[in-house]
Image (tube, rainbow, N blue to C red; front, side):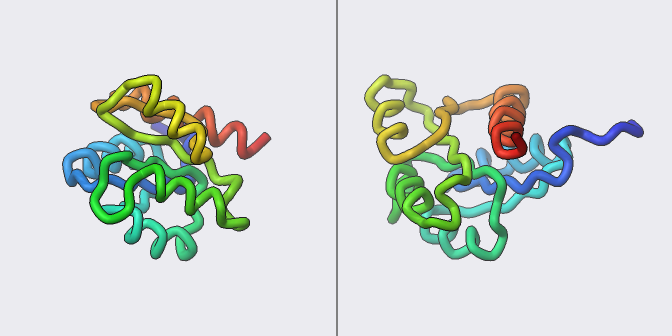
Length: 132
């Protein structure tokens, strides 16, 4: 495989309290050439985001201590990261959940369990936006 992936070098943060979800997202993203930063919850993510400055953030909604909505809102309120795309991850696919995600500034909503294709498509869509 000589050609470089279009996602090569993209820094993606995955925030999820589920080790299984974090691990599967990490595998899919690494295969696509992304650099992956993992966080177990919102507090963990906020501690790492300034150091790593990800190009894109995936955040689970249902997490202990600081949920995905709160985490997204805090990322978007920070002047340094308000342009960073945030994709909400949830097993719930209700209209209310999607609307609430939009209200706190999320850029997209991805339902779990996600496929490799849907995850990489979300990264590609937002990285193109950032590069344009």
